[in-house]
Image 1 (cartoon, one colour):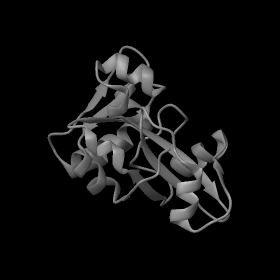
Image 2 (tube, helix red, strand yellow):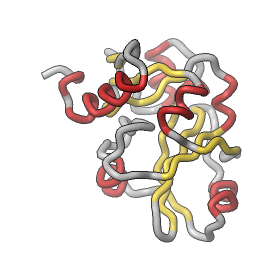
Image 3 (cartoon, helix red, strand yellow):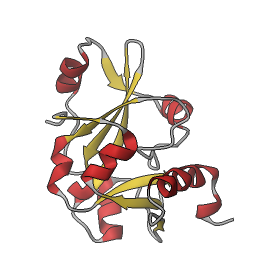
Image 4 (cartoon, one colour):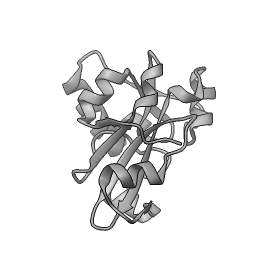
Length: 159
């Protein structure tokens, strides 16, 4: 079985192709589990890697799409969401809510509907790369299409 046959990767690929038939999954020989590894594997800047970070709030989950060279700001996210409690989701929560394991969490194709925030600092890059359901699979997109395909809200959510 190849990586492209994995259910999680097929889920991402189906949505990508429905969005843009010219889209495809890039399979990397090396891991893209972290933003730094992905940037090395792709030969791009770390900031062009989209990190998909799942946060748990009092009564929901939020996915934050953050530039690989930035850190999500819990305070900014709390302010935007008007909540007091916010923490990183556990590995079990990530798997249950998104259907992906950490290192391969895609910004699309989640098992449950999640509110998505996109950090506006990603706008700096012409091309962006996001996980496609497995640590060795990514897809290339741009800021406008990332917003369209995820229906995420563009906010300032990094430190």
